[in-house]
Length: 610
Image (cartoon, rainbow, N blue to C red; front, side):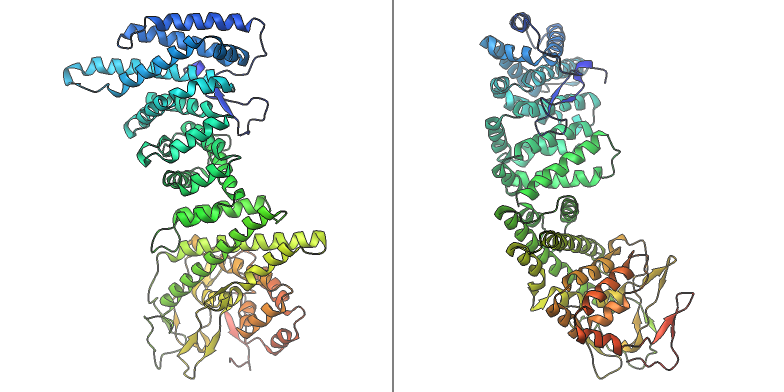
């Protein structure tokens, strides 16, 4: 940057650069303690108070002169923590002068356009530039002065309302489009972050204030809506510092109106910066956002946040989908095993949320697919008589929300799989499972929705009616419906399923670019295989639902579902292990056809379809 002392270097005192106590200074490195720091502080205070004594903010030359003095002092303060400490404890006159400068600046800046007319446009533009430069210099000095020194933070915190008002001014839509105004907004946000870092009382005061402000007055929301990565980092750092180690403040972030809006902005920004170049400001902002939501996860507040992000009459919102991605990532990197009572409660609440999400999304997906296929449980179904069995009908209805719901369903399934496997791993490592682990393992198998278990929701009950074209499908049969709705993809081309005796087929979804459906069948059959592992009651329910045949039909290659065949074979293994009744079902089944080299299913001579 063109201003040497304005470069927002990330400084930590006694910790690594990823510490939550990071502060902003303008020095390239912190110099060792100097002898005579007290004398240097006296000279600095004399220089500062002397420059302030005859200062008139309406005089352009005085503004330029004082700005230069402030820049030089800011550089000296950035070089020495000991100097900052002595300045803060030497003379009260220093703080009274600093207070007057902030007060005068706010008054001049926020009344700047009063009485303006076209004849004074050029003069007013020059005055605005002077005030902007002065604001930048004063913010830089304050930022460096309070870095890592709690007594200085306490003295300077009385200027927080004025700093916030100026930050609100410089984060307006017009200001954020101007590069010079954007630089001022960055330094002001860094100043605000440094004001409270490692200072618990000040963090509590500031957080309570922000969470009770009207939404349009919360400057953090305006900063998070910026496309400038350097403005995002200090805003996210302030949020993380405030909620780190305080469940009360973390709860406010989730439950307060301003806090919920902040979470929405954070999720929006993380979705946009996910693929940011490593080492960029945007990538650092994403890491800080991830740390914020990790803290909410550790505090057990994610289920509450997920509920807050809901919208009436929508099964899943874009922000809920992003949150599910963060939950999935967190569970993959940080196993949430019930090591103590607190963690167990968090895991139980999360499992309840995942179970509820699974049933609601599964039920919605089944209804949407039936409407598309024209199934009898759909209001669009009408029996068709005397049509060829291989006739393909157009979709009765297409639900534009279905891909998004299926995308979220994949994430929920992956989260359930991870939680369950972590419990299994903990049991295996310690030999005898604890009561909490046994409860977690059994929880998802005992879940019920409209008297159906999760396994039954995956498979369903399929019974043929007397007519060759009318069939009845129970409300819980996601995998069975998906096998008809989503054709397999081989060599980039869909492979049409045989309609069999179910009547005329319906055009399935064959566009492999619909990413919402990727991995869906694979993850669902994987979940089924885990749920029935050494659980005979679940194995029996799957058999009674006709699920063994469904799983066997999924032992195929599908480019939309990598490793689908392997997961289906593993699920079939778990269904048959220690269950003679299920093994007998497989023994009775004989293949009615085989796939040729072109991926076309050919009937086996002498085989009869049932």
